[in-house]
Every structure is written in structure tokens, then in C-alpha cells.
Length: 81
View (cartoon, rainbow, N blue to C red):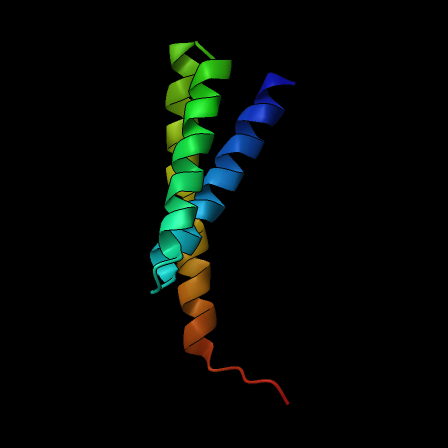
């Protein structure tokens, strides 16, 4: 069950960081604050060093994956009919 929480926290944090890096408006900082708040909540909930390291590693890997998917999607040039 702890691994599920680890993955969910990392997933949401990666999505928030992806939104932060791809939005070019002042509202992008809301996503940054959301990721910071989520990280603080995770660090309060799980005090083990191993879980904290895995949280950061998984969040960064998922962030790069989501950013790559977003970049490929925007470069495909698909428009709505």
C-alpha cells in the first residue's frame, strides 16, 4: 500500500511539474506551488530516506516522460476537424 502512495504522489507531482514547465502564463506558478506543497506532504507522511529518494527519482523520470509526450504531441500538428 505504501508503494501505491509513493507512485500516486510521484505521478501527481510529475504532472504538476509538466504543467509548470509548459504553461507560459503567470498561472504556471500555481502548479509549482502545488508540486512544492505535495512534496512537503509526502515528506511529512513518509519519513524513510529510501521512500524520499524514490519519490524524487520517480517524479523526475515521469516528468521527463510527460514532457517528451507533450512535446511530441504539440509537434505532430494534429488539428481538430
